[in-house]
Length: 520
Image 1 (tube, rainbow, N blue to C red):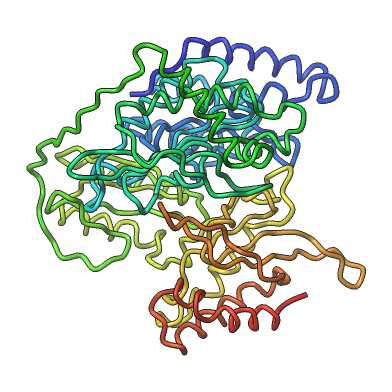
Image 2: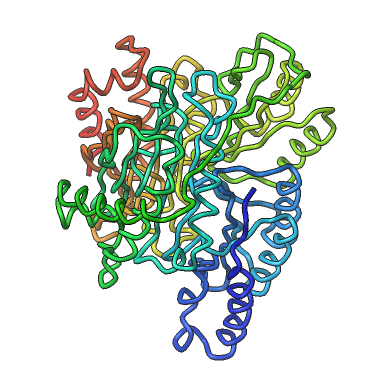
């Protein structure tokens, strides 16, 4: 369970007071970002509306909390909210007065916005199927929650040089994104023993890099020593002068890999002198007598490790869900005679877990009108320049045009494409640097007119031992991206490839030729 730190109340009170001062004196004297970001509130491009981001540690959210989120979205964000790549949610187009109401109305269900923006310890990520996945090493959920509580109780977690991200994955597939985090833990079993690999110094955006492996094997009880060490390392040695070089990965660039590891180990030695940091977490397997097996043919349904139980992945298009659609799911869950679990995913969606086969089929039928089973429809996009004040291109518009292009395309073509990752600018909020195929926005003058352009990337991989940054291969005019993807889908089909990664590995010259067909 998340334990809100003692300073939370004072931060909310300070935010409310600063809003009043801001309304009286204006942006020039009281810059909104100077007090809004640390409490999870950002001004949108319009200048008159705001985004509010609550914290959902490890993507864990209860039915009671989800009901409150839906209620708040109905009242203050036009009956809609957004899922993020950090297993958070975001309310958009909120008036400044209503940002305060959202903060206060979420408190009774133990949901807070403090520390979700600005130079803070962000949401601790966790594999969204941890605890139920068939081939997991072990459940890492409680490690993510204990890490959250440990980090945020220190008020300095709101005073880092820049954002600080920690992640846990339950196996080598790294669905928690540990191999490109500031600090990441990947679970494994060796000789029947639970262990973590430890990674650090990774991240996307400017100066991107995959994480260094800091330890091949540590005992799970010791994770907080590593958390404390990296926390102090970053707090003391992160760049506070240049925010563009202020992330943990920039310390790696500055010091070099070996010196970075040496310095980290010095902080680790100091951390080991602290008392009461060992964790004693026992993985308990609850009885779930409602299980019932069913053959379900859908790629958004996965069988749990307990036979007869299933998880369904819900991906609202472009990451945005209406409360009317969400409430259909909530109403269904509410009427079940047993308790399911809900996890937000780092792919802008969420899982309903521990359903029996019959109920999984029923829920599939409920969501079929607003959830797709095609990877291309379930692609990732940042919020884009329509809303983001630093955005360049409208990534949301691009994703909509891609989905529209493939709406009536034959299944044999549409199914050829994987999920794509789209960022409206180089900042990589859409995680284009991890995608097997992805796009990053910029602008260019063509015949005297400013035109949205997208750089095309191939080859990104995530996973312990295989993590690789995507490589840029050229630029395409934004309006031509959907047709480019249609050609890519046909190329894969015509060449007979089952796996998109294999296509990229074997046929990158063919893909480059397609880029040149649409290049600027």
